[in-house]
Image (cartoon, rainbow, N blue to C red; front, side, top):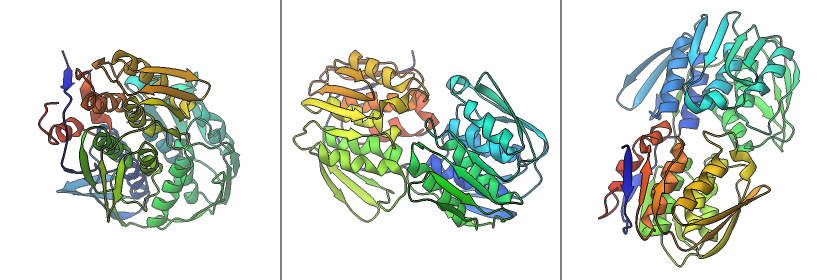
Length: 417
């Protein structure tokens, strides 16, 4: 049986946060559209990033890896293609508008949990911008055929900002100017991350202060660039929470000036009573007397699993808001998290848009992550502070975002994961 067991033990050590898959995929998309050779330094090699690499190659880019550097030769005409997005929602939603720049038919295919995730938000806007787009009752696969045209369009940002990121990548190459309205946009920092990456490749996008209106001047051109991928606050959050639960940890390769929304884990750790010290590119977290906390994860939904593990160890009732953002993740993440915590002796309640967690006593048991990488990591971290240890089934699903997670956890102390 595919099970990894995490026993309670005190941790101590230094680790580097994994590279950001979100920034890697955005950089690959920009490099695909930039004529010439771009260099991506320190890219993520997780399963989602590898899916993005294969998509870029299928759309005409040439990728070469040497050590910790990837060269992307972009700007080639896009052929008719079938793009295997595997389980990467970002790849499907972001590369669909990019593929629609071509007059060729492109099919974006899905595997596993991505087959059930919503893609209907792509159809209306792409059609209004002159491209053909078809889904299967709002689910993958997605078929597009361009050419995409500039214009004024409204997008539904209440489920995800990923499709918006794809439009921001594609529309600068259209002949005319475009206005995009994204009322109710969630995960606004991710749109800011896209705007920032595009600027590194010579493309300018103007965004309103509330990140719900965007002006894209048409007729721009991408310029090949060298881009260094920063550390991933989403993966690093699990390591930082581990330090708060079970000893101390130093996590390198985390930039506090980052636009990544998950750096807000520092606020939650502070609210929970952990000792947090921020250095130049590193964060140190030490266990102290933990207390319950309240946190709004609406614009950083990937923090929900590590913060649920943190709350499980805080005596009293913690409240995490933004649970509605979790329905269309790799699993129905809110209910899957509640089930996982219940299996290890932690009482939770889902009410409206929040999860309430009665923490302080993690019994231990078995966590079934339901194929969700972040729930697998949350279960493992909770195991550090449990009485009986936690067995994580189907633990290899962590390769979606952080392939070395369990190896890194094992390196931190006397226990065995």
